[in-house]
Image (cartoon, rainbow, N blue to C red; front, top):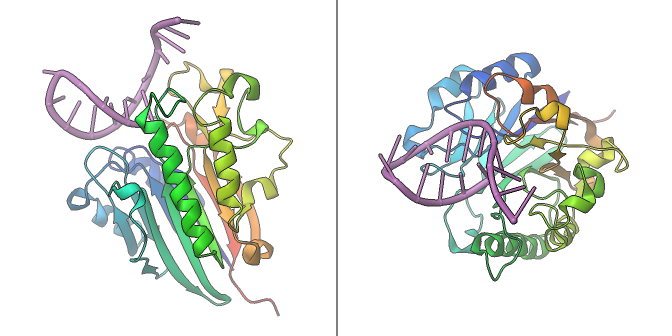
Length: 270
DNA sequence: ATGGTAGTTGCACTA
C-alpha cells in the first residue's frame, strides 16, 4: 500500500478548485501539499475540500500572496513548533506528522520566496530575502537533522543544468544563479535526497514550471524545475515512483506550475 | 535591451 503524495503550486486555490477536483478524480492522491493558495484563513474553502474527501486539512494563508496547505485523507498531527522564518509570518511553511504502519513520517511543505528580478542583494531586497530564507532553513535542518521526512514544495530554485531550458542563458536569471544553487546544495545536504532525480536521471531535462509569458509554452518549452520532492535516506527504499503531470499545464486556465506525484510505500515488508 | 501573461486587489504588487 502506497501513500500517494502530490505537491502543486496552484496559484490561487479558489480560482482553481475545479482543476483540483479533476486532478483528484484522475489521480486520487492521499495527501496534497499546495503552495500559493492566495487566500486568508477565514476565506479558506474548507467545506469544498472536505467534500472531496480530504477530512484532515492544515493551512496557513494570508490575503493576496503566498499561503500553503496540506490536504489529507489520512489523519495527521500539524507541526506547531516550526520557526518563523526571517521574522515574517508570510505563510511559506507548514508541516504534518503522520503515523504509518512502518513508523512516523514527517512532511514539510515549503514555498520559498521567488526573489524578484535583479540577482543582486544590494539592489533587490527580495533576492536578499530569498537567500536569507534558505540560509535560515538550512541552519535549522543542520541543528535538527531530518529523519523519516519528506520535504516538498515550490522551492523556486532549479539546481541542475538539466533543470532549465538553457543553463548558460539562465546563469544570471533568478532561480538558477550560483548563489541560489549553491545554497540549495547546502540545504539538501542537511540530510535529504533529491527524489525526482533518483527517478529521472540528471542527464534528462525535467521541468515543473513554464512561464505564462510564453505564447506557446509547449512549443517553446522554456521550462524550469522549481518544484521538488526530497526524502531522507531512511525512506528512499520506500519510494516507488515520481511523476510530473506536465499535461496539466495545458488544461483550461492552468497554474504556471504543474503537480508532482510521489508514491511512497508505507506497508511493512514481510 | 525589452516585453511577454496571470492573480489579487483596488488604480500596484508579486510572480
